Amino acid sequence: MGAGIAVDFQNKFKLINKLLQCDPEYPMCIQIGRVYNLITKSKYWNKPTYGSLEGAVLMMRELALDKDIKFIAMPKIGCGLDRLQWGKTKEIIQEIFKDTDIEILVCHL
Image (cartoon, rainbow, N blue to C red; front, side, top):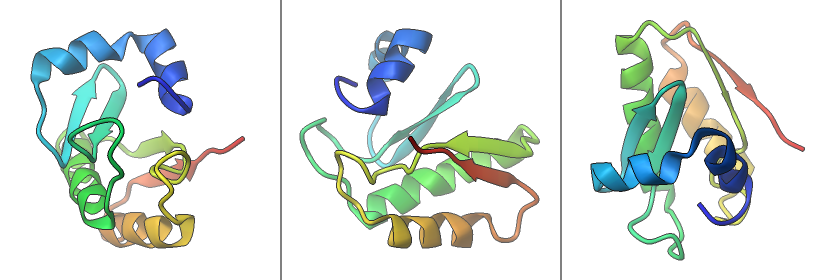
């Protein structure tokens, strides 16, 4: 959580200490307050794969369905410093959420 949009989230929500308490494996999705944290790699310097991204997004969908969430706003996950391609990432998200009534808003600068 030292670069990119993660810095903004850390500054606003103080997530790092809460995430460290969880000792998460990957892929994983951990909800802290109103924020879904997608864990897609074991070390921050590693790069995620489309498979690990898909696994984390699947877990996010299950959490959202369980809590009756109807709207999720997110950045272009995995596509900044992690270098995943947005076209493929978008396809994964659309496929995972296609049979739900959850609306996804993708925000970017």
